Image (tube, rainbow over all chains, first blue to last red; front, side):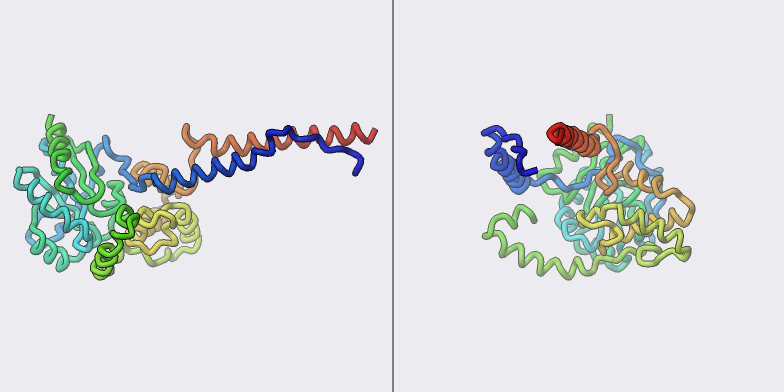
Amino acid sequence: MSDTVPPRAPRWAIWLPLALFIGFFALVMIGLYRPADRNVASALVGKSMPRFDLPPALPGRPGLDSNVLANGKPHLVNVFASWCVPCRVEAPQLAELAKAGVPIEGISVRDTTENLQGFLEENGDPFQRIGADDDGKVQLALGSSGVPETYVVDGKGKIVYQHIGEIRPEHLGLLLGKLQEAQQ
Amino acid sequence: MKRLLRSPAGLGPVIVCLALAAPAVAQEEQSTAPYAYRQLDDPAKETKAQDLMESLRCLQCQGQSIADSDAPIAGSMRSLVRERIAAGEDPEAIRAWLIERYGDYVSYAPQLTGLTWPLFAVPAFFMLVAFLLLRRRFAGKTEDAK
């Protein structure tokens, strides 16, 4: 057993562990400085809006039935909540879009009537209809992974674009462009 | 937030924001979905649901499964899973329904696709290499013994 001479590794093999280490280190640094995008986009973009019929979130206001989204005109569907801080940030942009004549439909996720009322009084109400998604089922059906998210839906009820996160002023052009595209 | 955290100078405002945001976040409604925090009455179905929930990713706190996460969206997802299992739906059909909406990322059980095949092929390849190497080595030993 001790007589057998193990086959000698070639000379360059001595560098192999170092090379492996450098490779691994480079991988870690790349991951550290260019982290992957962790937003989970909806896989429904390009497909038709799932069917749903949400009850009104506010008394005296209409709820949101997905049939409305197929009425021939493009819509924005804003998934939001009163407890969501970035939703306050995007309120002025939504107001501007509403002023430009864009129909905005709201889906209020896991919210209460009082909180929602307070939120709209504070931040303005750009919505035509607001559906109450109290248990979050419609949010899941839409493939939405958080609030706020905004979907551009064409006149036939097809989702053509999903905006993840708050709408900042620099996104207005993009969204208006997508809406215009959806109109054709 | 990630971007702000990178520069130490940006930390001050971040801490202020977090302090301000905390009460608002705390007000986030827990999922009112019926089975977010309630098990199914049938233990067999609950076990089935639990197995599936442990292999689904919470979309908000992405390192956790929906069984482990206390995020409201995870509550909604748990309720969805339990309600569908109670209705007799197959767990893999529920997984497929979620993948259809969120992509493969939502599932911790990797599917065999054009992108993931090396995940399955590489270990098999290494096993094969190891087998060949060992066979050569053992074959050498027996020759020496002669």
